[in-house]
Image 1: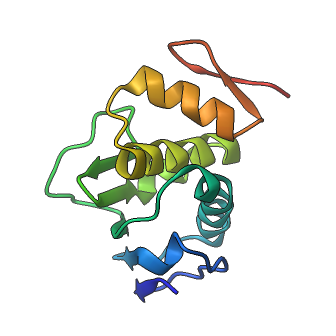
Image 2 (image 1 turned 60 degrees about the vertical axis):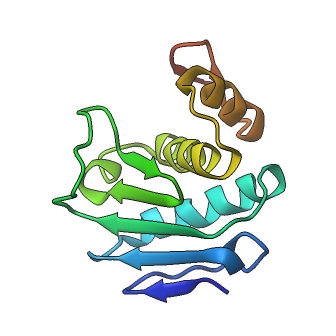
Amino acid sequence: MAKIIGNFNLVIENELTDKMKIWSRSEVPSRIQTLFNKAIELVTPHVKPDLTTVVFSRGPFPVSFADNEVGIYIVYLIAFDLNKLEKYADDSVIVAFLEEFLHCLRHIYDETKVGYEVAKIYPKVAFDGNKYIDKE
């Protein structure tokens, strides 16, 4: 089971979460926690589990996020800005989680390639090489 520091309800126990540390520096809304659990369920068959730390915070972060970024990864650290995540629709939040998991655990550095991989994993979206498109 993941090591959890702070307030977080991880409901999925698997080989991926066994190697995960989740650190919530701020109160993580239940909607975000539910979507994170869904993203874990979706991504697990597509990645090789490795030690990963996931941080949820309302900032400030020691690195800067671009205006359109809700998450960032550095080696095996993934950080999410809760202030930005809360503004997105559910599918967009799941896409953000999947993108960062794939960057981190599959070492995909190219944003276009990661977009196509997310679309393969998450059937509710397509990727046109530049942006995600809802299929529903």
